[in-house]
Length: 166
Length: 455
Image (cartoon, rainbow over all chains, first blue to last red):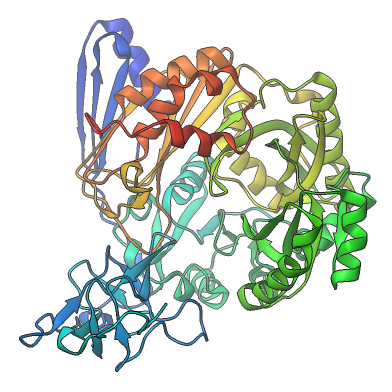
């Protein structure tokens, strides 16, 4: 159960007329604190303690979680991380060719993928000059903030301007 | 038939909102939750929770097969799809019908009628609604013919687009040919539908919408809302009624929305979106949303109705319980959408663990939320955390109360857009009322995030 905004408003009305400044309620599956905030009015802080009654199949197990990509990269190579956690996409849209592939040369500003976080798309930049040597995160896979998306070998970077992607 | 057990095929604050009405009406609520939402606040509030599928929405909230499977597994009488996800999806409505389960939404015919922009437009024209001058543009000759009627600047829009996607502005005749080519190929790639149409560009428009409710035979209007404060076509702030509209225009908008609902034989809750041209003081039909809206609480505050309860009643097949003369709009209500986004960094998403939630409470204040201390906001879904809804005697009173209420609201652990609303409520142009849809981008250019005391 929860106390609806109407319920809380009724509690506030009672408190308001009582001269009390704070009420703390502890029920079996709910705690509620209603507090007078000076002249500004009242606040409520509610915690629903009840455990969800989940049914229908087993709990999600570890084997449904994709394997975490290896975090370590060999000496001299550079890992590219997502700018923020989200679902990693290697192409601008389904069916389109990938932004970059293994063997491609990249600059600092080369877009190597996008991450979708809360329905917002953020481009992933290589951040380094070099050659893509490996992808550690698959297209469509969820990437934590510290995940390694791909690995770049800076030792084999483009030597002149005009090379690599535009 | 009576709905005794309702499957809620959605998540977030709207799931919590629907559960609340179920509890009040004595309907058993069953939440269909993805693996990312099994511990959420709505999961704790629902009578029961059934696993819908893996965290990615495509495998859970967007999968009609998974939703119907969940509904059958718990022998639900009805499915409430909320907003977004499958709420306007004819495939889900059809699958529910075939399974003998009530889909809480309009008929499949109505979903088709308003789901396609061109079909919706032609229905609106038949019902006598004004539409933005324009028409379909299969090729350059057709586009030029339409352009000659509507003038420049104009918009080239993808039939399959929406929410601001698939729209291109053409300022002069010289740009028409190549923009049209680009729009057609982009529309084919992005929406799988190359059809585009051309329409007049309204320089200064307001987004005004009318709430309708129908039982398939009769329909009524539940007032209007203004949702012009938008960033990239995402609404941030809404209010009811729409401020500073001439009485004549407001009455004509209501009549137009009613005419469309009657024409469609509409059953359910729906919203007729209109573009109000501030310069010409006239309005055009934009589209119809065949579902409950995020901003429905401002209508509930000024009418005193529970729109979810009305939605369930007509879904049960009951005739409308309200007559038009029963609907009275009292005072003014505003809604601030509090999102997990960082204004200081171009509204970057801010998923994560919520440490603490302290909400304003009292007369005229309502907060619809799906988070409490300890909640985890997944990166898989949208960023809406809470809606602060405030009711006042008039607009100035509602805004004044909203300022105080925002000062009391604290959501700790993730970065929220509460500071945006604090700044917005201090803005003189906004406070005067009736801003257009371009206002908020201008506002952002002149306001820097207040980095002190951000919560």
